Image 1 (cartoon, rainbow, N blue to C red):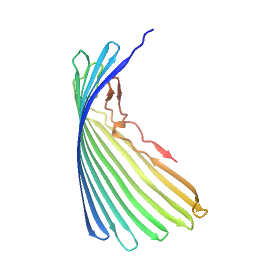
Image 2: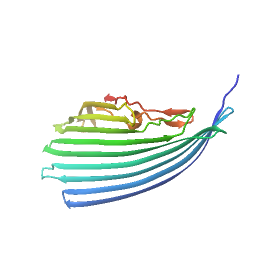
Image 3: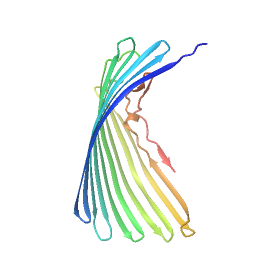
Image 4: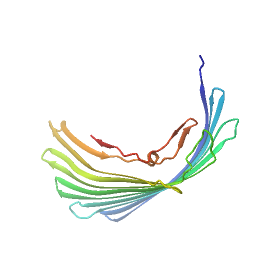
Amino acid sequence: GSEMCIRDSDKSNRTRFSERISVGYDFSKNTELKANYNVRSDFSRSRTNTLNGDMESMLRQRIQTTANEGTLIFRSKLNDNGTTLRLIGDYLGRVYRRNRDFATLPGEPSHSYYKTSTNMWNLYGSLLVPVNENHVLTVATDTYISSEHYRPESDANGGYATDNIASNSNLFSPQVSLTAQGRFGMLQYSAGGSWKMNRIEYEPLGMDGKVRNTQSAFNPTVQLRLPFSRGRHALSLSYKHVLGSISYSMLTPVVSWEDPYNYIMGNPDLKASTKEY
């Protein structure tokens, strides 16, 4: 019999930069505004040589990521009863560039390059309303919006195929919730529900085949807790239904090579999972 031995050798280096600025302003003792801004950059370079029997292959890549993120947080106590308004806005802009060269040595390498530009917004608002000293209502909305633009270039051939289809992807995911919390005697409770929708669009440029993936669900939540033995023990009961989220990498049908022999690819028709526990 014969044995095959695969050996890898790796070389890599990485450079990072990050800077954060935070400011705050109090309009009054009950109202405040905070702001944060962060800029960061990450550059890495690596080379992997793989020896598979008598065949040697090389994978060389350079990855650069730049990102800008800003957050605004507003909080205000509206009355003496404790009714509180909270607003949060968050933005993230990110540009990701990847250059890759692959070759079966001593042949000439094939080259692939792609650039992904992503813009993400998250808008959150909540209103906490104390009903009395034992019960509180909270109304909240949380909306996530994202757009991604994928632009590839390649002269790859043979065994190192890549996705040459430029595309745009968009995500819209709003959520509205109502929650009641409090106690009846010794019994502590939290109960409510939320409605959530995930809508993702994938559009390949210059060709037909736009895909729209939409899911929505009502997600109830119940939690009960009854302490006894002077608080040393407690009985708890809970139920929750959750509609999960799907990332772009799981949906966009773009080939991403992990190493010279393995790649991953998204599925535009994938549905988010639901959980009950």
